[in-house]
Amino acid sequence: MKHLIMVVEDEEALALLLKYNLEKEGYDVMVESRGNKVLGEVEKHQPSVIVLDWMLPEMSGVEICKLIRSKPDIKNIPIIILTAKGEEEDKIKGLSAGADDYVTKPFSVPELMARVKTQLRRTPEKKTVSEITFADIRMDLVEKKVFRGENYIHLGPTEFRLLKMLMETPGKVFSREFLLKNVWGENIYVESRTVDVHIRRLRKSLNEYGPDYIRTVRATGYAIDINPLSDEE
Ligand code: CA
Image (cartoon, rainbow, N blue to C red; front, side, top):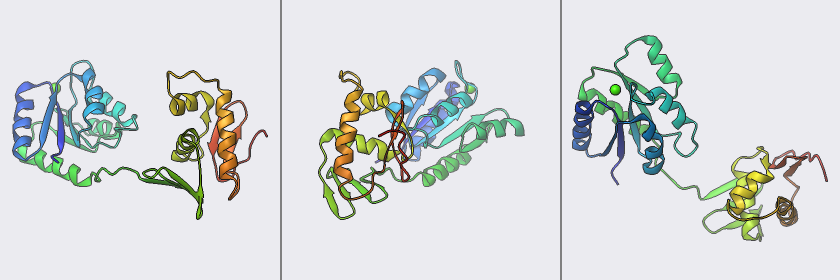
């Protein structure tokens, strides 16, 4: 599959020049010229590299860069900031906003092509996570099976999704509201006590073969933790 490169540049002539040359290199190219549109387009199309102009209408490249870095699903996309500013201080500002590289205008087209190629080399192949583990608990996300050590643990679909949520960020305390929204879904009406019921079921199944790693945090929610000092129960 071809790599998709997103060019964010409001100078039309330059945008076209970049598009032409990137396409010649064999990439798919999309051009965006307005700052406030970029984030949505990046989330939608997940480009392999973003070439991002600093000076844009509505929102600066640096602001966009910071926003992209704050979104878990797109934060690892390499960004090359393009700018007419050559000051060292600006370069630092650009890189500290999370840019991977920084190219000063005017630049030679072959140089930019080389920089794009460098970023693509650094981008790991997108792979889907097929397994997550925590201590002796292993979740096979493809087969939708859970094991503790060698023991298969049967979980209902809700318990499975709950455990997955907890195991994706060990130690993080998830509120009941958050769990309801992300495990049950936004439009389903369930009481927050439902979370407790399913956590209890999850604990019962998991703890058959090992210690309790689910931590109850009083008035807050739940976490999975290697040292689960619960505040209640
Ligand atoms: Ca510009």
